Image 1 (spheres, rainbow, N blue to C red):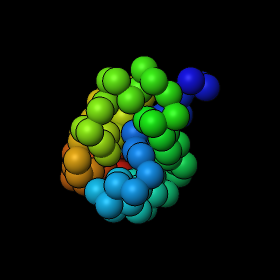
Image 2 (image 1 turned 180 degrees about the vertical axis):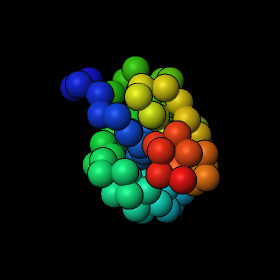
Image 3 (image 1 turned 90 degrees about the vertical axis):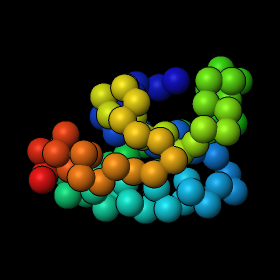
Length: 82
């Protein structure tokens, strides 16, 4: 995987929750001056095995922050934009 962005969204094609999470994450990242990196778990066998159907997953600084939905208040707090 390329250098990790500060904010990543583990996602897959055709996932409605992933689409909603991507929109939310883009808005929150913009507030912090960041651009989230979208990572398709189906493009990598290891990621697909690790995440399976447990997407979307938000990673902040390479660590799991939330999954299925973006924890907006917690993410704003952790990004210092609250």
